[in-house]
Length: 164
Image 1 (cartoon, one colour):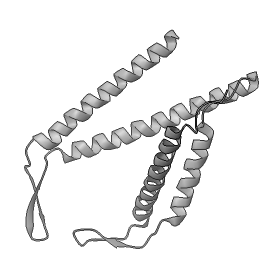
Image 2 (cartoon, one colour; image 1 turned 180 degrees about the vertical axis):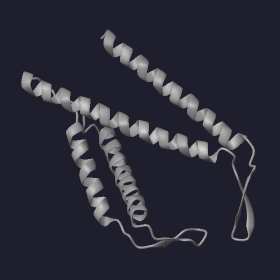
Image 3 (cartoon, rainbow, N blue to C red; image 1 turned 45 degrees about the vertical axis):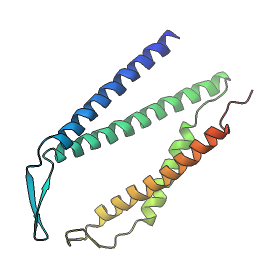
Image 4 (spheres, rainbow, N blue to C red; image 1 turned 135 degrees about the horizontal axis):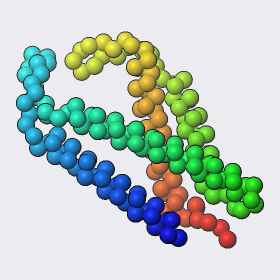
């Protein structure tokens, strides 16, 4: 019980630190000057000074999320294997989540297109791996949003309640 309280306290601290850092980056992005000018399509456009910092922070958050999901999934999978040998009831869906995500990524890869596209500034993007990776990311995000909504609805309906 005491170990669980330490884990909850540590996760609250980690979440709080990430929240504060995110707030600082957002304040810098929206609150500090718009001094960067870009000439595009015959117009001078201005963009926030800390756009690069915001993008780096977003990449870092995605990395932290992916690493924590993989890490906790692996730990949960190992715990499930240990409980199987001791005869206790298995809990969690870590294995199913990994299988679903892997299948989703493979299907998304085969559905992705390498057809060149034009960006907003008229530049033609022809690099095949960039086109395929962006398609894989988009298809995966769409599928995971649908699955998240479905699981939320099923959870609210009580489908996932433990049976006694």
